[in-house]
Length: 324
Ligand code: DP6
Image 1 (cartoon, rainbow, N blue to C red):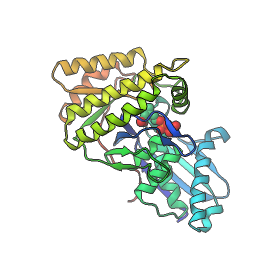
Image 2: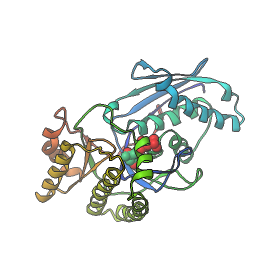
Image 3: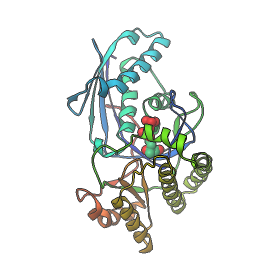
Image 4: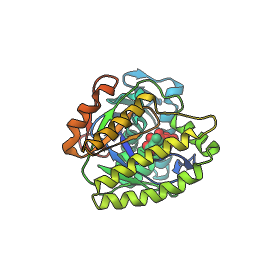
């Protein structure tokens, strides 16, 4: 096959990834855990072509915009070469459409590289397992490794072979997206991680405590203990923002409105509607609740959003070829 189309969804971490053990191979300093969403898809078509090119949401990308995608294609070509495939010397056209708010920091690099891993490996004729696709997607963006997996994923720390994501059982839940701002974030995750690891005095404690809390989270998921899952998720998100804020110079991703959302979530809990919050490297918050409370939570958080919409999201499917 010389053309393939894949679709992938973003994932939101309940135990966060923040810091690398190896920058080149994108190996995380600690494991993490996430829910794959069922909306904000990225759909990517890869077609073998005369030259490498990349179009995103209808806009042709220049050298800077295409460089990470082309570096990823080089990786796929290396795999094709090792597998003895004669596609290894061919260039490719990549056309991506993102249904999520790309600039809003809604985990678009995760769905983007997960879809690209599936589409490109197929177009180049590689037949990879989900595990190997997860390892491949990891090389584009760490969190993308988790978007290969249906519903709930654990991404293991380890070496190039052993650092992949796999599905774990977890209690059923809903996430409510609370977008409070658009626009590019001030410091990219990639740069923010390096700054944290090199300047935050709390970083070693962050890494060791993340491994401990991940074990606790996996246990809570196995026991289908939604309360413990929620408590761990909110605590761990706050710890991530704390270790980041302790960088020098300080980095702050949460805005005053983000904190208002966390206060509102605490109020929901006080009112008996069990809800927890999490936020990635940006001001947008995701509320976690039991499915039966999703609509009420969305209603109660709506006025704090940018556009008056707090979308209800459910566990979704891992990256897959369209037509599969
Ligand atoms: C805060 O996966 O975007 O969303 O591996 O450098 O591409 P790179 O970083 P990326 O970082 C995601 C960080 C996070 C937490 C998480 O998703 O676990």
